[in-house]
Length: 510
Image (cartoon, rainbow, N blue to C red; front, side):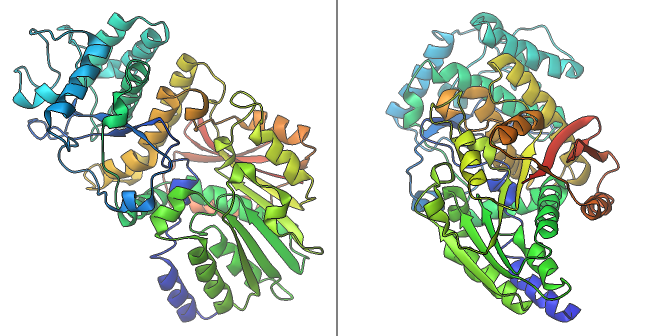
């Protein structure tokens, strides 16, 4: 296709398909009912050039049945999150303080200011400060010690250490400071969730859908994790389908459909002509909210793209059921079609045997195996947070997201005006969910590839080798990023890491 024509297609799609999976496939989404959600303000009174995370941080329980209209009335965070100054609202905040820390103490210390401010009267919680200072280099250890105290129900030690953390973390500081701010919020939410039900009464703000999409686009561009995942998965599908005339791809969380743009282009250039491609997409509420409509929007855009490249194309939207409840009858399977199933950053959201006797995670794999696919692609974060107890889960999360925040720091300038929103809306809620929630409320449940191998093997799958051409293309991709990223092939799978930490693993199965 002439370069000019390609550019026209690209310009048409870029505003709508900015690789949105950085949100829906990283796991950030509007959590299920009773999930504690965080909204923070910056301390405008601080003299520091790096705003310190203040104590004006509210968590709310968010009902997953809320309508998209509720979200579109919201806006990005600016200024205080306190939207109700009524006596009843202040009473609820006071109740939370009492539940967590007991009666007021007139000699309380404050992390950001030595004097008691009028605005502090409505703080959602207070921490007694220890006058002994801690150096910045101790921040990671203080986070670990705080989590240890929480895990041992040592409330007084937890309060003292978390109070120190208040003065050490910053949403615009060093990577460990920024991550520490959100991990501290997770600890606060964990302590408060069992002590009071008043979070249900607190209201916060969500970004507008266009803003949310913009944040995800920024994250996609500054980190290669998602591009790595989609490139490796598409390479396996292209290899498996190289001789097929009828190709059916089932994507269990299609989002904006952005993963399939490059695959459609690759099929268009295939010797002998492109196959007939049919994509079946499943969705979630966050994706629909961010793009401003249902899956028919994705279908129309991908259809236009395929037509411009001369590729026969159909799109099928699955809207009646969620991914965890899918049955073969929902997928409109046809004889003589070669089937590919794509699980990119989605299976870790499926409850397993530790959450429900239904074990949707393994049930789904057995169901897919029964469909006799030519290839199944798996892309997941290389982290162990599914069944780990709270304290080792906290340490694992600290180590994993430290590497991720450090990698963002290399490519996204510290002074970038949207940095806080990008990290808050794309990453922070995952962190808080992992730390604060248990049972069905904890939806971020990552597993290491070794565990996924066991699950796929028990379901009857065997490994499908990844293409060496894809490995070469990914290495070229990484040249546009920091030298600290590394690509490694082990046991038939690809691992993308930051320095010595694996962050994303990609594999294929048949």
